[in-house]
Image (cartoon, rainbow, N blue to C red; front, top):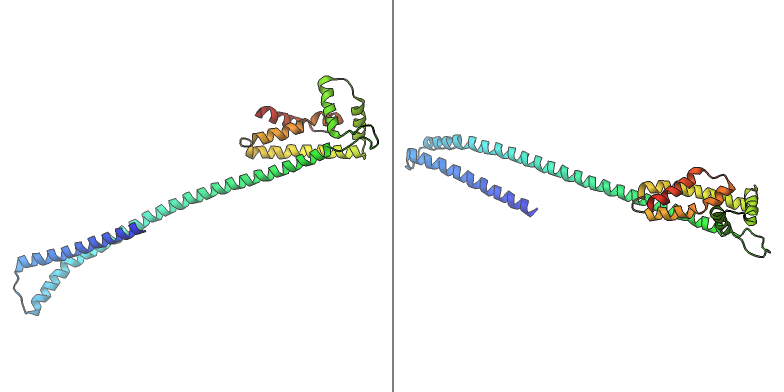
Length: 242
């Protein structure tokens, strides 16, 4: 702001000096041409006035015209500069808004994913053995048993009995297993969406939850009713980010 004021003052000073110089030059030329004899004749003074006005008026009019052109040009430059600055600020604001929206959306996805994981953890700790039985058996133990059978082979009476209850419509075990299936499939859907926004920055998050869900697949596939793309997704995330 102070630089603009200083520039305007310099421009006014130059204009004033130029105007005084022009007036002085016209007067000097008149003096050299007609001398310095003072006249009391009004006609002589009228002629001098006509001479000064006739010479200076076109010069001042030209100077005013050029000044107007310069002012218009300056305003156009300032307008273009302001437009460029506004466009840059708009671009920065748009980028910041997109970044904020993406980060907020990623946080919302992560919140839902964590909620699903917590609900799965509670279900896996659910006791499925009789209360008066010799030992307490949870669904989480059946997950480990299913993994053992897949890796080592053989049979497991406890797991076979678990499968019967898990497939029996209306049983307590079937209701819990059905909820686990639903949550695992939902987890896959949200991880797929989440990976589109945060796959690079949050790859460990994807791997962590994909690995946890992938550990349930042997049990869930033994029960039946799991879409094949669910295991494929969890396995792909785990292998791709390792």
